[in-house]
Length: 476
Image (cartoon, rainbow, N blue to C red; front, side, top):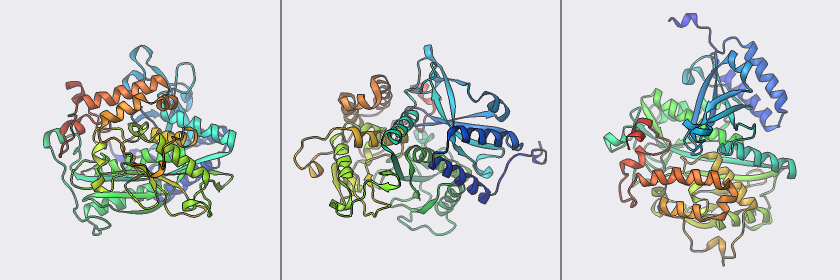
């Protein structure tokens, strides 16, 4: 069919940026959800060039799922969108499979037509249980409830900014084909900050950055990273749920841009041994009425007593929550001290091997950086674990806690044991969700060699939750 017959929405990047920034400002200012819903429904009704709405949600492991609803159907049925939860890993059992999707109308995005197709808009969904309550396995909903309750009771706004590293490899299906090829091929071997204009890595970074800008990310800087074919595209901080959504969109954008170039954007923590792995350094702070509560110009390292207490609780529970922050077999290859790996459970302003770093900051930028996070972890679980632990966790009576000789696990089996045995993780997630998450992680571990060894094993990639290939899983 000729495209001339299709009058579908395709906006310029400038128009997209304006729309997305306006929506972002509404979300930041906590405009009434009723007001936003009414505005979005009117927009969808009036904009005849939109044919479908892509509704996004994440499973327990953090894998992004997308469903397209016909626009007219969604307008009339947005409060009763059902789906089969038993088909989603870590969600309901078959006997209780019916779940519903609610619309988080504030998390509404316009995407470039040349990347995501014409005639569509995107919105994040909220998973709702049969009784109308938020579904416990939807960690995005858990995080949103926690964030909103802190704002309502204490006036706290939870802020986060994530530095997400990835690799660009040759081939459209480099990860899914790894069990056949046994290797990843670089597109560039230039290294840190070095990639000539027009080469595949620079073209990829430029294109992904343009898409992010159009989607309201408010970019800061982008560059090749230390390892060959590695990249990082930085953008501004946001409220914790919006920041988590942007992590999911960041990875989606990178994968889609790479695929259109015939390449693969990979967020495996350590796809290649012998070079630096991919991290997701997670910068967090808490503000109240516009004031950064982590800033104190007279405090140690110029952060407040509250910030240091936050750090101490993270260090106390470092081993408990390690599985939340490092969610795959492959993630434990990255926790290697030879490559600036943050595997030491301590805090430092200068030592990049520390789990927690205190960056140089000012009244606006003062923050705590949790470095021991893999980019393949569930972003909602990561930020919920960090904030709830930092605010509500315990503080261990360990001499010199911030510099004690303690280390994160170097394998997923130990991380599972720590997570399973910790009462704190039960307090975080509840017994049911905790047990489901352990089962998923144990299933991945059981398919892989216990000793990591010196090269990436096929099962680490083949059975990785983000590389999930239903056909291959069913062959095991």
